[in-house]
Length: 328
Image (cartoon, rainbow, N blue to C red; front, top):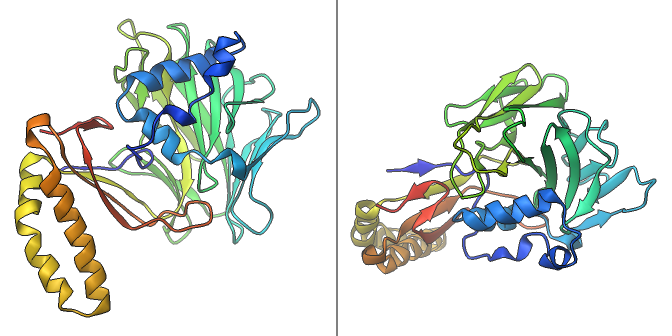
């Protein structure tokens, strides 16, 4: 069974509405980073849905565009999950968790002063040669740093120095993710496995390396790359969650065999009814998957705090070619 943990969970039914407004492009005021964002997201299947599905809604944010603002964008308040995106690039991005846990993320280089763009992002230009950063607020008061690489002259390594609480440390996982754990190895924050795509939607090799409190994003762009390139990382709170992608045979197996556990759960009382309905929903999605057009079953799972409400633990759906996984 194929299991792919996503950089964030994909909401495949969302359209391109969360991308930066095309109105600015028509007026000629769109920055190169915003143009790169729109170009790459429009080329990669499922990427627009990922970016829209994890991004915080503008109504949850406070934006200050004044020249003297110390925080360009903020979310939440003291005593709750909160996020602060500073105007001064010398100051770290701050993620604060209700209860006191915090993570600070310092951008690479010495970029220009941040400015709000796209309704839920802050643009920092020139974090490195021919490289910008679009910092996007996330629904759980986490943050996605979209690294925009504009030419072959840009570096391939980008260092994000983290400010962690005492006793907290980085731990690399085999699937490409990095987690922040406390002294008891309890996961506090997740840095999803990175991705990178060029202007034609081609995947660019990418990985993380860590050293003490530093996270290095390695984007291996080369002569075959069509610029610009868009890459992660994303930092988020919560229990590890993800998406399971089933192939065609596994989808058929669920469609046929899933009826039995659904019937068994239905005999186990109220909680069993809930399980039975969940399994029945999964079976229905498996039955309606269409092998002729290459549609298979996916299962999104994991508790995820989504700014004021707890999402469902288990949610089935269909996919064809998503997050680098193809129905086959």
